[in-house]
Length: 519
Image (cartoon, rainbow, N blue to C red; front, side, top):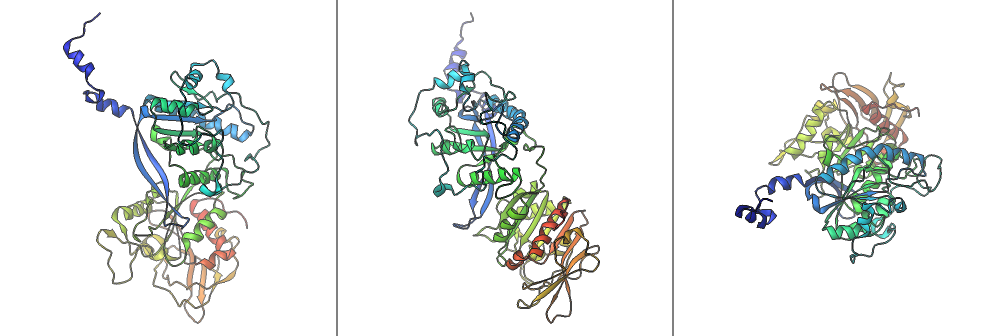
């Protein structure tokens, strides 16, 4: 046996924080997350900024909860999606375990399978503690606190024919259970967290609208205990049948429930925080990501566009919104999401942005990705003639010419009725599917001529008593190669006109390179 030297005795006596290797060891045990949350744009508005902030958690004070990742589900689609997600989830769990996190496997109703395992006994041995709020076997939705869920899951949420109603026997095998992990399906998870000094919890698993919210080891109940809880939004799924309201794709249904959680319960993160690269997406989720930027005070598109998107785009697009700040008109909180966009829709009027935000817009355009604009997009980032942007902000006065392919020169009278007709020779253009050959708008007719070389008018507007007709919808290919669809329509009454709704939906599908269905 080697005797302890005085130096060694001194080193052992020192507190851990005083050791020379502590910074390196701390870095190895740190979990860095990018938490996404929702903040109401203004009290009572019903619209939310999507905000992301970086946090650093101490691994040994963090728990990872794996909720009901069963080997088999009564719904075949759910079984298939769990199997597809499980290998990635196993990688996440391994990465968290390496950083010192406590891993708690919670495959409900299968404890008999695990009764003799050390992981099960570990959870059972945790001493009971008094919770801040009584833990329930199931925490149901409280409409007064969080409103109704954004999806109708009253049919159980299965799009296929159910096989049986008790199909599971254990956790899916692809997620490994290692020494030091725990297994439970009850309040034991909370007791064990308190015993270990856990302050932070990452919840993953299925199903977001059911067990992930309701179980005693999941989002609602752990949040109420005062723990720092996040949902890993790409490591979850939803029991939702697209044949039920709001009649969107299965994956959009999941997005809507995640948004509900971000508004009312806790932030979310992705597996990329622990593994790097891009977040996980199911192989059947091929929706392009549409980012809608709405910041104007004239035409209420902050109300009309979300409703339009839910009804018209939920089957084909993954949609994110960026709204103007209620207290600073020249600030667009959450605009960083443009970096993730496949398509952008701009509905902005006379905003000059902080340089960092304008750089995000310019970066998106320079990428050559498609962009659509409605109504005031033609003067989105331009101040009225003679005005200069405030210090620290940047404008883009030639956005109309350089990005949209038009030349905005104000508009005709607000009280003039405008008759809109299909441009000659474009009757069979797919973007005009479902658009009547002639319809009217009470919105003022914008003066946008001349269009850029190569721009193709789709609709022409003629204001009463005005000799010069003007394009009101057109397509263009920018110099950087990006597709452009633009329309000077977009007033509130236009969204009640079926032809405009079809035009905008088809224009976005065309911009994204998606097929346009027959009317």
